[in-house]
Length: 276
Image 1 (cartoon, rainbow, N blue to C red):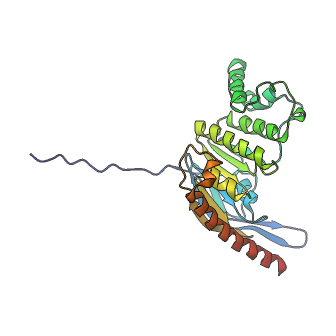
Image 2: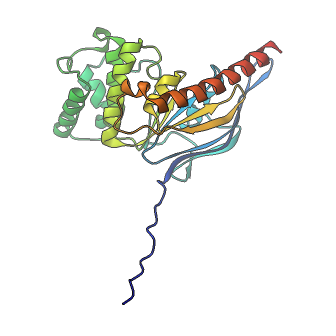
Image 3: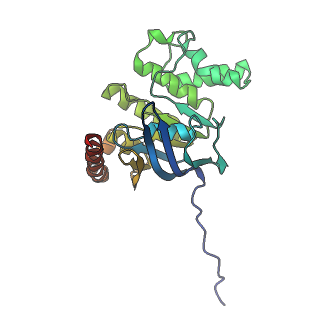
């Protein structure tokens, strides 16, 4: 009796949610032109957390704004789920570096405004807002206005205000850059807790190498302006992830050293370019 043969299982890679193809961006200033992005090509897959790092002024935020549909590339294109990006998309959320809470709205009104715009009925809206307030540890501040909150608390409001609308792709532009180290680490934990529930694709811009490694599945290094992709490093650290404990692991130290040396080379290249 012969054993029955079965076809080998096929493992499919997660679908590509964001694809940047040959992005180039040139800005015309009064007396000269500046090439902010030279040739950036990369992709972000479903449920993947990808960080962009690079020297200051290399074009990270410009790339993110092109992906968001806020800027048009001079050449190249961005695809989200195979559709060319020509304007902001409802499926794409954006969290900015600057505090974007509305000072005339309370915490609960700030968090729920996206649901209100989408026509979610008041009972459901209140329940979902209450859930997010618990997640962000903002109980007792529901009726507070942003001016009464610390910078870290306002950024928590901005985080959950975006997550509550359940974007399929989330763009984040240095959202913790203005916070002290302790507050930023607390928000790293809360971000990963929120993301573990929803697992959308995230493209995250940061200048902080430790932040990039401890949060991400992949870290993409952009070179000095005009930027292009210099390295694309996979972060093989298990999830769920403790953003503090993970920094003591050999794999974290290995990745940090590899990217730190490469980042140093790009910094020197950028300084050489400025001196010319």
